[in-house]
Image 1: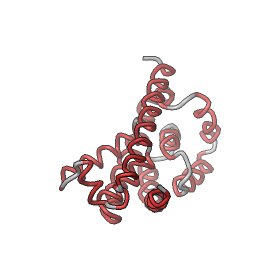
Image 2 (image 1 turned 135 degrees about the vertical axis):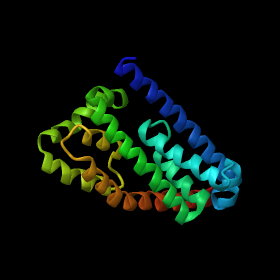
Image 3 (image 1 turned 90 degrees about the vertical axis):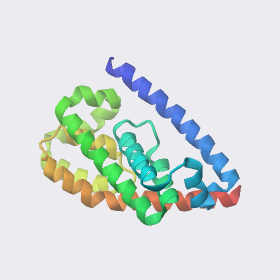
Length: 197
């Protein structure tokens, strides 16, 4: 499968998933599910350790194959499992997914990345490849920022000379702030929206 074709397929699945997520979110708002984490947990069938394992796998997949909007799944984790365990499961899934992205890019190179992102997006960040020290600083700050394209940057990092150990430490130390910001913003944002409807 050519890069352009696979990218189109991923983009199509992403759009369909986003539309479905918005539709389900509106339905849940009307049902009051966002106001009751227990109702959401019951609705999704997430129970016990199997629910946690399933959720972590979803988070890993959405990082490696961006077919599920990451923000929605991050908020869902907090709503389903509560602020503490939701954060833990989000953290584990996103960290593992990020490490996989790095290793896939390092193993398969530019060809793999172009199956996931467009050439235009790829070119936007490749100028960092010539300046390793600057990229390391940029990468660390970007992972710390909640609005950065983390998944793409993890792929680009796999093409640099950054060691896997250094990459892992940056992800482990910087990801908690981003996940916490997303979780709080989306959970409280959804509660605010539920009051409007």
